[in-house]
Length: 188
Image 1 (cartoon, rainbow, N blue to C red):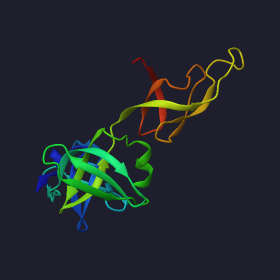
Image 2 (cartoon, rainbow, N blue to C red; image 1 turned 90 degrees about the vertical axis):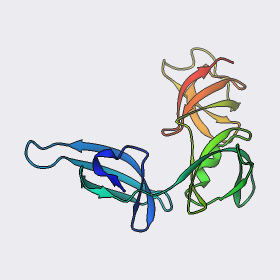
Image 3 (cartoon, rainbow, N blue to C red; image 1 turned 90 degrees about the horizontal axis):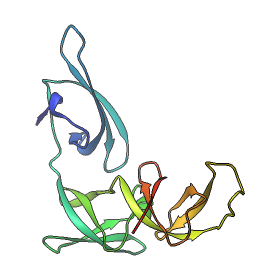
Image 4 (cartoon, rainbow, N blue to C red; image 1 turned 180 degrees about the vertical axis):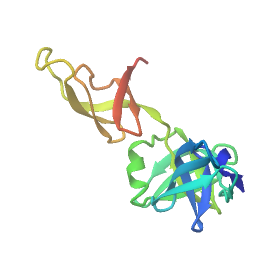
């Protein structure tokens, strides 16, 4: 059990018999009465969004999840394959509609955190920012457009994003994985 006042972004709570990840939390202290926490949660299993208002002193059930760091090995038609960095256990994560878009952020050999609930992997935590190599890019001549112009590129994982015109094939770029936006060029 966890008190409403102790809930932070990233906490896993058990609601309706399934784990929910807290994605937003806001405290409100009305001058009179009890302080409350407004919480927006997303189901880790099916992506459903749930909003709750909890008094800060009230206890709610937290989901007992394990977070393990695993190396991404490869993906086949049906599963992503990971290996636990400490125990060398293998984890297969089914490719579903919810996890399919994560394939663009998984790079073979890189480590990711897996959230495990009741023995099953329920989430792959993608870092907030990831470095990618530009695999495909069109060349633009200086002066083609006004300042701030962008062009589409494709990374080594197949992710397509828009970047400034000066980015060339083979360069490394930093990408915000929550917004799919270019952040900066990375010098190797």
